[in-house]
Image 1 (cartoon, rainbow, N blue to C red):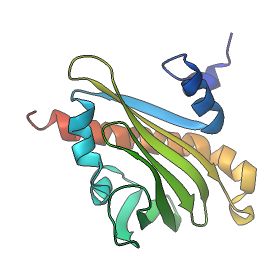
Image 2: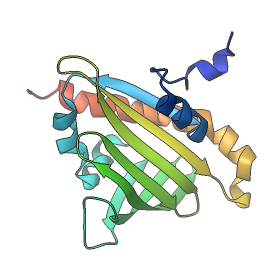
Image 3: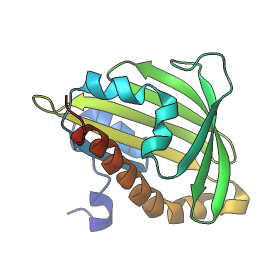
Length: 171
């Protein structure tokens, strides 16, 4: 039997790709949204819109000429409790209606991914998985371990706000 503290990050599907994501991304949250993957993608592909549903994201500034697709770079003013930082990111994966991946290149580094999977008629599982590395002055591995449940709670709240965007609008 698995430890209860690991239940919250176990993938909902048991295929090999999910198992690899779990090993690579220690923070892994998801929500089911009553819309198709394409409908959700039309909203989230606009990276600037993320500040509307991500409580920890306060402003996004593009640092590349492109604003969509692989190679897009931007800075995100991020605030979590007393901590403020500029998260420098680059889009590394872009499959419309399916996947948006980022590389974090700021004070906190690592990788993240949004994935959208149809989970029934007009239902989408929106998954947010992250693997982050903290610098020594933020506690390195211990800091990442302490931050994991805090970030998980914040990101679950973000996903609830994203879901609310679609529940409060007509299809």
